Length: 176
Image 1 (tube, rainbow, N blue to C red):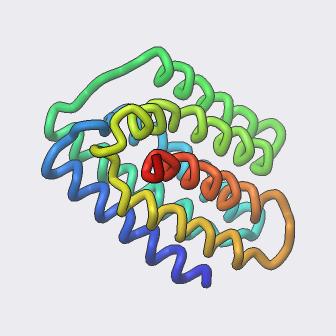
Image 2 (cartoon, rainbow, N blue to C red):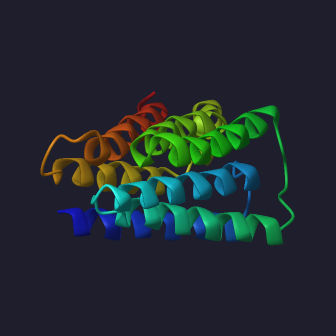
């Protein structure tokens, strides 16, 4: 089941990257860059805690490629929220060094949710331009990852669990 979640995550990012190549409406270079950094922190922290980091790494690589496409296309915007999330990325690294990977991963997941606010707001404001296919794959991938957890350690359930909630939030406008 976990392998299927990783494959769906790849498919989700292929869809998002193709959207970035065709048009950049609703996609932010700073958001995807910060998501890439946060996913890398989460993946490395999961690896430290003997949790499979494949899903986080796929999200990190996908966000990096999306950010690169947006950079090449000149889609560069920076907001105060991006500054806040950048500070949180730095705090994640400090926490990792001082308190360990579990704390860094937890703050990185929270930071990822905060970094998602503009994307979620745009999805709710302009649901017709939202990449629903990618969002559905994102939700299913994270649901499968959550269902494949073999124990309830926070390092194993928090990331896919939070991503399931975010996936639901991003799909709600589809039904209204």
